[in-house]
View (cartoon, rainbow, N blue to C red):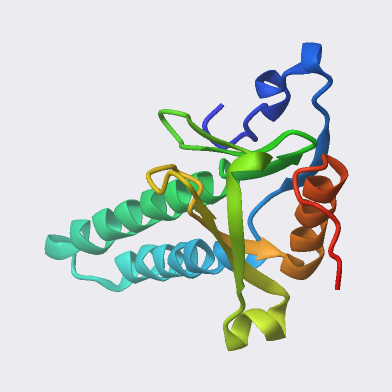
Length: 169
C-alpha cells in the first residue's frame, strides 16, 4: 500500500541477533505542508461553485492537482522511517520505489543534531551523519522527534557495542 508504513523488520539480520532499538518516524511538523495543501484544495473546490461555468473546470482541476500533491507529500513523509538497531542504523524511504540506506555503527564518525529555533520549540531536529563514505543515503535525516534522546540512544548502542573506548579524563 502506498500510504502504509514500510515493513522495517524484513531488513533485520535476525540470524546475527539484530534487534530494533528505536524506530523513528517523521515528526508531525513534516505533515504541515500537506495539510495546508489539502485545505487549499478544499478552498479551490468550493471556489468551483462560484466560478462562471465557462471557467469552472480551472479551479476544479487545480483542486485535484493540489490534492494529489498533498497525498504524495503525505505518503513520502509516512514511508520515511529511520531505524536504530544494536548493529547499525538504516533508513527505508520511498513511495513508488523503496530505497534502503544502511550504515554499520562502526562507520559512524560523528552525528550532528541540528535544532532550528522552531525545532527547539516544537520538539524536533535533524540528524547529520558523518561517516567514512559520504555518498550514503543516511547523511541527512530530517524532522526527528525528540532528537536529543534519539542521539543518546545511538551513543548508548555504539558504546554498548564496544565501538568506542571508555573516556579516560
